[in-house]
Image 1 (cartoon, helix red, strand yellow):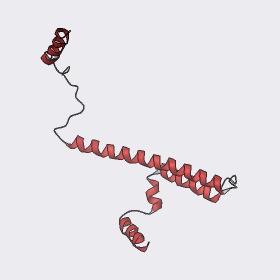
Image 2: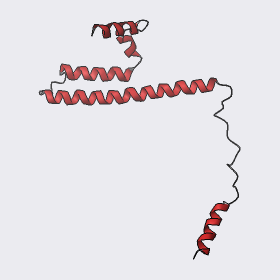
Image 3: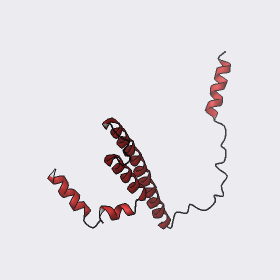
Amino acid sequence: MLKRVAEVKRDRIGKGSLEERLQSQPELRARFERMLDIIENAGGDVEKAAEAERRVIEELRQMGSEVLHGWARRQEQKKEAAWEQDPGVNRKVKKNSIGTRGSEKSKSRNRSLRQGVEGR
């Protein structure tokens, strides 16, 4: 446990406080606030542990989904920016080709069809 705490502290060096970091993630901040409301029973409508548990689990599921979607969008933007920097890549030009030219019919298929007819 102490080793994990030391790792977390080491990883946080150079990063802002939790409050500062949540400022740049408004959706995540709102999700944490909703979870705190459940924990504090801010609405006064949760009387049983099972209901509180259900609500917390639902918030965690939604938060996980939002976090992963946000992560995927950021990864896509990073990749796109990297490709934009590569001078050999041009994704915004219309292609002139209409496709691959058709090739001659397969002789093996014609042979198998002839053998089927001759074998009757």
